[in-house]
Image (cartoon, rainbow, N blue to C red):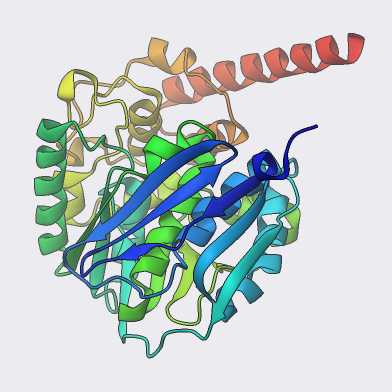
Length: 370
């Protein structure tokens, strides 16, 4: 039988500094340290940012979470809604069991500005531009999609993000975290990144009335219980409201929208692989999907940050490993067919989607036959 401490994630009380929060997590017999640093704004005084970091690991591993430092009461009260929301997206997640030893009121008051996470990607450009009238700050996180030790690429990306923020007339808040040193051992970043975004939003929540997180999928692709509910977010620590954004538009529609702004045309960045240190490699799945969006929207020639032309053979070989991969490709096919633009891309997408549907059906039949 496993001992009780092997079934727990314990978050020790965080160490607070003027520009950072640092906490030690005990996961079974292992220990990990996570730092959240922001030199632009003073971090929150509670340990709220470490609740999503630990809670999503608990949901995946089935471990109970124990918070030893101060956690705000409103955040704890929001966790039932969080679990319901996440279960709609990820039905296989375990029950959330979280205990906090030091429950405190929300450390108000909150600020008056509105912030949005910003990576210079398609979704984040859309959110920044769609709310240009009231977005005062953009938040860029070092360590999420570019490794902290890749100093050359970090410098290039940071310079472009700063230039884009200036072009959007927004103040840029830069945060640095080593969270992925922990998360990559236990979780797939494609979904666990949600924990990182919420953690940073809570870290900065005293300074804003609202923090927006750009979503990827249109409302039609949401789980049935969440469709038509608008862009909402269930995490709430009593200060800034944290909400998703952008479900009203497909990615090709977003591509067409942001093409009207020079900052987006000059600085759009989507690449996570950054092959050979490229800003956008133009060959990885994320670059290819974005190039497809730009092509079917008829705006490819307006963007300067992608090398070469779209390789249709590479499109036909695109991996479709997650449901969201398929949904994003379907959105491009819908626009290509509706507007009769780039029939060659439409045909490549139909072939790819038909093939991957057959492969998925074959895998299901194999599992049922065992």
